[in-house]
Image 1 (cartoon, one colour):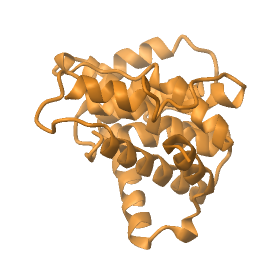
Image 2 (image 1 turned 120 degrees about the horizontal axis):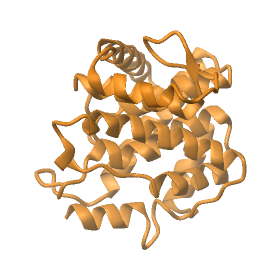
Image 3 (image 1 turned 45 degrees about the vertical axis):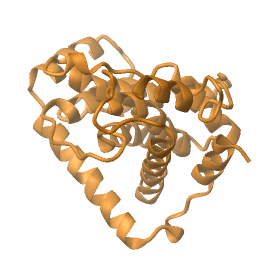
Length: 241
């Protein structure tokens, strides 16, 4: 069984009953923390400017934090992810800032699919575990990233995991979603200190939500994107080392 097949089966089959209580408690805290730091970023320049662009969309599907109006699923993820990374207080892990991409995709997709709190938690945990797995297989030096922002690189695939779970993707569709998301993964550390740094979080959340929705509609991506010779792990690893 390939890495992509194994992870896709894990995502499709995860149940809270099989998750240790400590992990559930940490996931709940991380979700609440991410919503809090996003609300703290309301009114700051990056969120204001991205919101101004999003306001041109007439869709009304998913909630934008700190704003009375709704927008499309992926644009809500874009704004909420940008807000959540604006003050840089969001949580950290081995694959960057996890909740800033997982929670916006989770909230937006979960809202449009009318998912329960239990289902949101299962999706968050699945996305986090996929991010941890990917961070372990990508060879890299921890002190040198050659200009690539981990949150942006890994975030697109982890948010695609969250949204894919909430959309009920099959294991094959989830692998297509990863293939789609991987081609949109990217963030350059040279933009740190500008409005684009928090946009990295928003873009990764947006890309994942869009990729999962595309896969649900039949859009395809490389099924071996995680383990392929010219796939995500191989190419990001070459850039990092």
